[in-house]
Length: 334
Image (cartoon, rainbow, N blue to C red; front, side, top):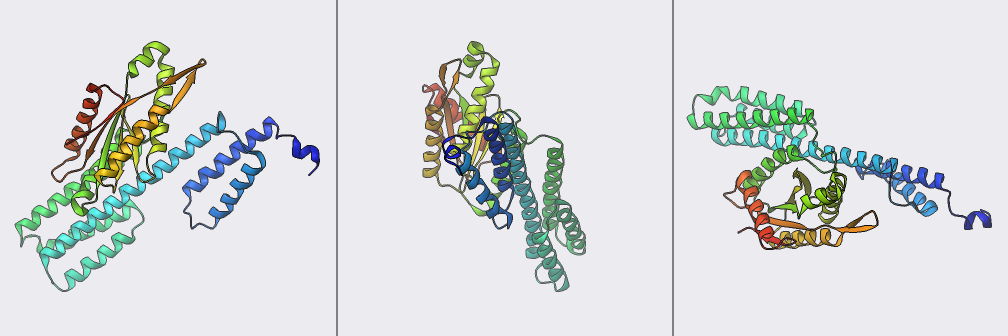
């Protein structure tokens, strides 16, 4: 490399191409398993690009490509979670049948084989097919127990409803196109799974409801385009403030919901406070004017008697209490 090449910075075209290449490589890495042989090679490539060009944050086409990969990653994450829920429902069903049927030789052995198939299944269609086979095999003992019949009917209803929701979600967008976080449809499916997991395993879950303070003022004063930028900015800050295991949803309008998984109440409160202060510290510029945004936050820890509806209502009520108390603050639901 000549002395002139060392001194002169990369030209604008080179930087744009490098920026685009970087977001593509990073997007592919997020979709790969870290054990994939390609992962370390792509990781090395990103380091080479950064050292050679030191590209600026993505903008224009590079930002659009980055957003595309974000949506792909979120959809992949959502599909995996829903498939695991269906697996767990079918395993619950078979274990219930085994407990009620007792040791009945060939029947118990056959059901055990079906459980193994469920855990090894890689598609929703396979899981549903195995579930139907299990239900068919239980006909030989179904008439022996009224309580078992009720259990089977309940499990059939659960799997039927989940199957319908999954089929509908295939046709509906799961990602909010403006903010690039999960939308209300995705929330409705996920919240049921979380409550079910809590009742089965007792893991700690918390729900954070966020509402942007004085959002109408941004629209009325600066126009709806600025209002959209406020939503995008807040959603981005929320994603960065939470852990990778947590999920952010645009619940509706200027309201967001955040699911905090496997967390105790003390740490949930700390994280909710971090969310609040992160938004408060952030800002964006409109026509040389620095615009600050604040939020009101409600936090509810999932409790034994909660349903998906009552859990959200408690968090939502706490958020409104925060607004009544002066906004830009966090309230924990009792």
